[in-house]
Image 1 (cartoon, rainbow, N blue to C red):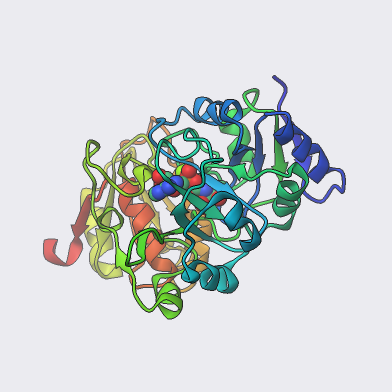
Image 2 (cartoon, rainbow, N blue to C red; image 1 turned 135 degrees about the vertical axis):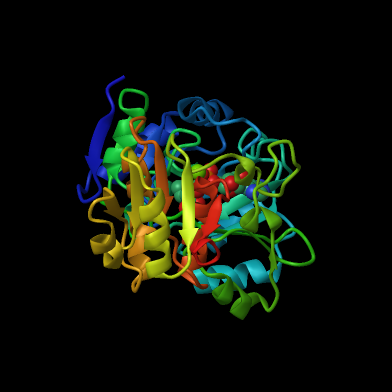
Length: 344
Ligand code: TXA
Ligand code: MG
């Protein structure tokens, strides 16, 4: 198959991409978070192609992308009023809500669950494609399963060239980490995955929020978890990643003591001069956490190289968007963290 690349700014693109979705094909779509691998979310054969192209375990459900809150009752039932309050505040945007699924949502989309994840992406071309397709678009992140997510059309081509019908190139994704997921199917709202909408922002609207244990700790692969995707080793380059926490100076001292040729250092731009002879790669600025979230996955992809022996990574501290960056980096490191302050 020849994978076509459509430009998001070409006025013909929305209809070309929507036509692929309607006929059951696969099209990678840009969103403000990461690129998604999209197909008709109501068509089990099209959905099966997503799982096949990604090599995704079929117990890991997909997110349905819709044009807005008015579409929630088409695919969900027993919708709490809090879902509409969240949508009003954060949609279109990087927030996914888990709600009870109607019977018209195929069980392969929800991986057999009775709930479905719903999101309305901010990227305008993608909302146009959904509207023209006249179906909700199921779309996981477009990376091959287990690999760092795709934040440019080039990343998608790298993983899927010849394997999918088309890619809509909308440039690099602004947020850079996947959407925040909140489960609204229980009495208390539960954060399943941190993202561009922060826990603090959710609390403002909801007044209550449980942080699921999969957000903060490594989950055993046989465990029963709320967001099945959270238990897999994720976002990870091939070689081991270890986070070195602590002050800039103590961390640099620790890393420089242990660094051997073949290792890499993933750090903040402000730290590059400390690692001149340690082959450093900066993924953004520590004093501008948005650049870290936008740059993290491209950096992890660059480090996905069998000739690298070990990666020492620096992780931002604090809440807000930093919380999502910590979550992704800790998962890439399989929660392997060294405290340089204690080691010194
Ligand atoms: O930003 C995003 O959310 C991107 C873009 C493309 O929209 N999509 C994305 O999809 O990150 P994916 O498949 O890579 O991650 C979806 C996560 C998985 O961890 C999955 O287990 C969880 O959402 N999920 C999906 N449906 C669920 C459900 N009904 N209940 C709980 N978790 C669910
Ligand atoms: Mg993913």
